[in-house]
Amino acid sequence: MGATVDWLRTTTPGLLVLCGLAIAALLLAIIKFKLEPFIALLLTGLGLALAAGLPVEKIVGTAIKPGESLLETGFGGILGHIAVIIGLGTVLGAILERSGGADVLTGRLLQLFGDKGAPVAMGLLGLIFGIPVFFDIGIFVLAPLIYVAAKRGGRSLVLYTMPMLAGLSMTHAFLPPHPGPVALGGLLGVSLGWLILMGFVCGIPGFIAAGLVWGTYIGKRVQVEVPDEFLVRPEAQTVGDGPGTLEQDGETRTEVRPPSVWVIGAIIAIPLVLILGATFGTQLLDKGSTLLSVLTFLGTPAVALLIAVLVAFYVLGLRRGSTVQQLGAITAESLRPVGMLLLVVGAGAFFGKVISATGIGTALADTMSAAGLPVIVLAYLISCGLRIAQGSATVAIVTTGGIVAPLVAEHGYSQVAIALIAMAIAAGSIILSHVNDGGFWIIAKYFNLTVKQTLQTWTVLETVLSVVSFAVAATLFAIAG
Image (tube, rainbow, N blue to C red; front, side, top):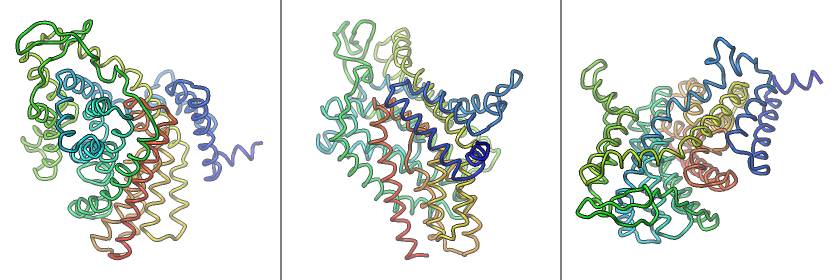
């Protein structure tokens, strides 16, 4: 018995078995027994930590220093990054939707692409918006548009969601200024220019295959309705008069006359421009300069979104006749569903943290490094293993980059070849998103998907995007290398 326990805790196959059993137990609890994901993630994470032999002090801390535990750092690490962003993004989306802005933008896209082309429009929207903003911010800002498009189109929410997610995921994994590709530039010694070029060359085919082809296929087969609460306002009765007339349904008030598409576009662009300004300012300006400090402050995602929310409050609310009390009611109502979302995402991050603490990621990387595979294949497989084991795309990218960097330096590859190796790493970092990935739970909650439906749609989409993009990179590498 003791030998079996040691094997499970100290060997790569044993750790794989242990983590596989934990993931299977988690899926069984959620899918079969309908246990709330927050509770299931918490229980499974604690159970895995104990089974793996992690010290109790490391799992839950001590009575004096609980803040250094996996439990608190797992929750706090992700929530410290996304809690403010989710809150502000949710409020901004509610103001845009209440003002009629989401309908205006969606209507313009449907005019350009037609009802049949609406999923393509959503994909392009995700692709364009995903370049300057992080994946999660893109979801929070664009989700209201997806809800309205699906409601107006009368088809499954999945059909509109998957193309948008494919666009956001592709840009996040393959293109600077996102943290993973930027880190690869430094680790592998390749210019950001080549990373951007190869990112588009390798990522666009993956986006088309995953977002447009797979998204259309699965969107016709998995039917998901848009809940009324996702739209914030149902049909309402008009009260008041004049240009600033509001609609009222109980305590809910909203603009009757929608703003122009240019106003909505400008408000959405505010956080994008500010974040992009900070990103490029970091690259172009001297450290310590006053202008860089200003750009960095304004371009911090939380600050940029706060500015956008305040502008939306004024332009779409106060200037059009709403009161501060009405805006406060909209804010409070929009934030009600956020609590459970944050708990699920935090629990998912804790579960991923426990898996990482077992050492399975390091064990897999060491084993694959000794296999003698071609560098680009090795880079992809190590990145895939790390992604599947611990859930974070950025962690998979940075860790794999550090492992293969000496191998890349030894071979003296050209900048094009190194950029393609970087794309292979990026492709591996997004494969098979599942229950240990915080993004998995954000998507499930934001788009009304069950765990089974999220696995059927989002998990497969990420895998298609990964495999197709890697295939393009490997083919080009065989030519350029």
